[in-house]
Image (cartoon, rainbow, N blue to C red; front, side, top):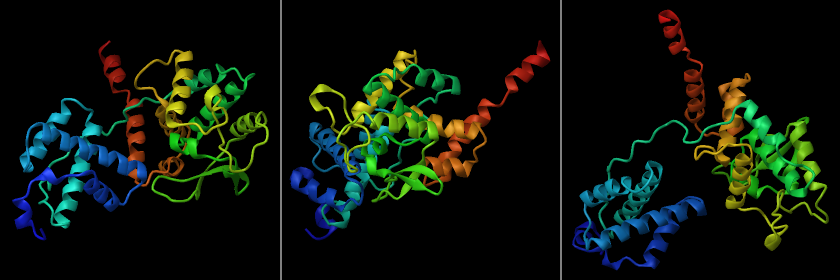
Length: 308
């Protein structure tokens, strides 16, 4: 089975976990990305096997895409479809099956942010609502202050260690592993109030070492352990709810959007905001700029003034 002519007569009934593992090892990406792509491919297999399709064709991939659009968000559909494309690109290279997903159109995604940002007043109310007389309060205040002033992703907060607090020029900084990077080689500066908040929290922890997590769990069953993505999201969401910020569009990721937006609103340049948020492409940062341009566009009021 060394060429596509033979492969075209073959069926996908030979799909095994071992073959998927072989394919996964071919993907040059992070473990988290590989897991996501593997999940997407398995969903495609379930789809075709449920329909007794043993020799899927290009139209089956298109039908799968359209089916997903009825049950999943466009961003999820795009990821699942991309995983199928990568899989069949690999099967074609290996002489196992033709690339039936070649040039199948993806999903048109809305370039606007899916999450809202917080206003300056909302951020102040959020932070002032946290009771800092408890260890949990000190920790949560430090986490939210850090996220909203630096725009760090949740994963960077989770992976931060005490030793990652270092210096950069004449500033205190937190070094982290940027998206797509292998080492903690880039950093965000810690504004004095944020550094103070982190130091106040760390002073409550006894017997710590440099390699310990910067933030740890306060739950009884795993006290002192590194926080998880779920726990960070729960901490932030709980604090939001405490000040009446109850919306599906306001999540932990909103703090990242808030950092980018408030930086631009307060005189930060597009390039400075790109560096702050570690965007590899300036077009991603432009989304923030375009959103603010529309927010500052008072055309409706000018028209109303002319009429009324």
